[in-house]
Image 1: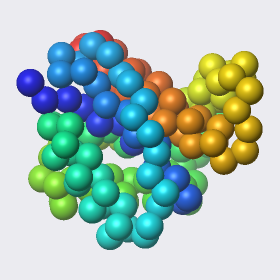
Image 2: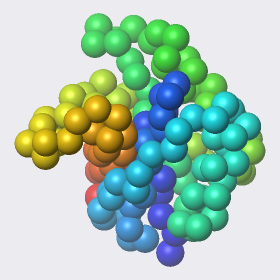
Image 3: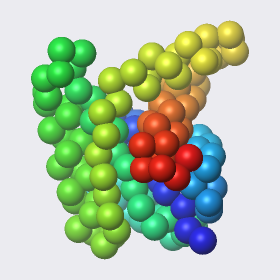
Image 4: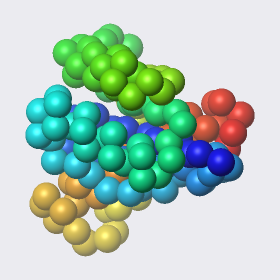
Length: 139
C-alpha cells in the first residue's frame, strides 16, 4: 500500500512528511533546500518514487484573516505543477497554524538557527499531513 506526502512549501526550504502505508501516522522526513522549480520537482519526484507516494497534500499559507496572498498563490501553482508533472492527485490545505504548532513542539529541543528552521519545516509538514489524513478519514 502506498503513502501520502505532505509538503510545507517555502521559498527557501520545502518541508516533507510521509504517512505510513495505512495512512494512520504522519512522520517528518526532512527538508529540501529549494533549487528552483525544476530542481524542486525533480527532488520531489525522487521522494515520490522512493516512498511509493500515491497522493500529495501541499500546505497553503493563508493569512490569519483568511486572505490568500503571494505565498499561497505560489503554493497553489506549485501544487498544480506537481500534479501535472507526477500524474498524482495533489490537494491543498490551509496551513495557518502548522508552523506555530511545530515551533511550540520544538521549543524545548534547544536547536538554533538553520537546523531548527529545517526541523520546523519538516514537523510543520507532518502536522499538515496529520490534519489532512484526519480530514480525509484516514488518520
